Image 1 (cartoon, rainbow, N blue to C red):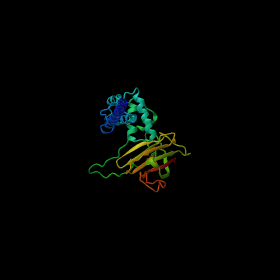
Image 2 (cartoon, one colour):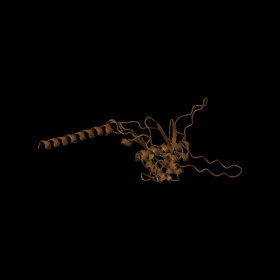
Image 3 (cartoon, rainbow, N blue to C red):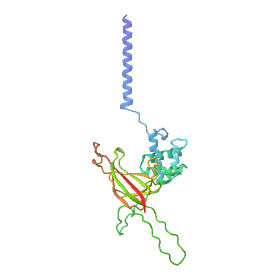
Image 4 (cartoon, rainbow, N blue to C red):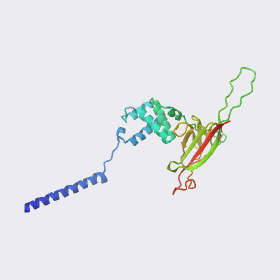
Length: 280
């Protein structure tokens, strides 16, 4: 009987020792000295980190234009059809209204890889930088370029006839509202209509700010509206927006305003809704 009690106590002590050792081992390996990975291969990254990697490759390609280098970097992801992967990421960026420059870099990369859509090609328009003042020259006024107006047709003179100039469509600003959009705030929502109130796609919109300018087009999100387009603003920057022939809408910003968001505990970025209509 005494021997049995001794062996039972020995087994209990053995189990306790193993449990304590296992607990100490897990504590050391998971908490005190956790495993850290360095120089992980791109193919082993998590899906969201792979997308970040592709976005970085697209940004680099937009700067240096080195397609061979971009392909070598993308090959490390070990994807069977990397062109379709990049194009799919562009489409998601377009739906989510992601950063313009990131989206444009990815669109150019997808097009270089042989995969492109109409929406991507429109979005690949190159931004136009604002002119800078040269030493000794006259000061340059800040803000967007003057609105586009129809070019008058000159009277006929002696000599061969000249082609008549077709005036461009003129759009008028119908509505301008600032509103609270919650966590998705900080955007300019533009709706362009024709004379009957129907949405118009492929209308160029120019947005400018003190550091530069950009162009985008309606019709990239037809599920919202054929004449819809949006632009993501950054906090602390004042934007001006112009549609062909409509003049400019100035002073658009993400100004935090509790008055626009009465049901929120803290102010959130404001968004703008602008409606333009084509007319004579």
